[in-house]
Image (cartoon, rainbow, N blue to C red):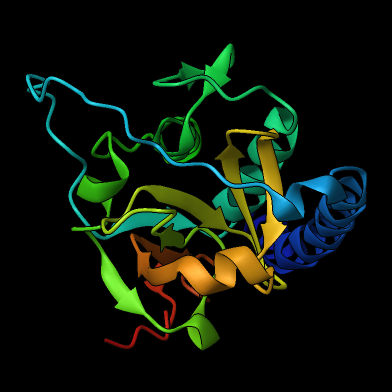
Length: 208
């Protein structure tokens, strides 16, 4: 039994690395199909009652590394779903509704409902230190933050665009680069590859 456990611990990281590469290539190929999104933008502008008494998940949200693979899978399955003002389900999303849905579906985490509220949580990080799952915020034709997306990798982020629905866009895109405000980290990645089998906190390279 001890030998089998040891084998599993050794093989899992390799398996996940391979799967991660396949999923990343899938997302990049999908991006080519949605290349028209690079000129699109979306402002949220939705008013909510504020009467939701559900408690938000405490930060940081500790997750295992394999959840970052599930994050890619969940996002790729939603690409192309139409934008819906105030939407937060597979029938349609707005930007923060999309972020809320992905975090709940992937990490069982409950987040604030609007981009402005989301922008008040998490650790501020630089663009150079972005990691998968980080949130990126923008001011689109507004003096206030009104758009949010989820960073993937290779400068790509996923978001709900008013003209393209759920899609991916590069942070190097001129429009989003101009209106970028900040990035926040809500996740703390747990490394399960320790010798004793107990998870330990991986470095997150957070900088204020």
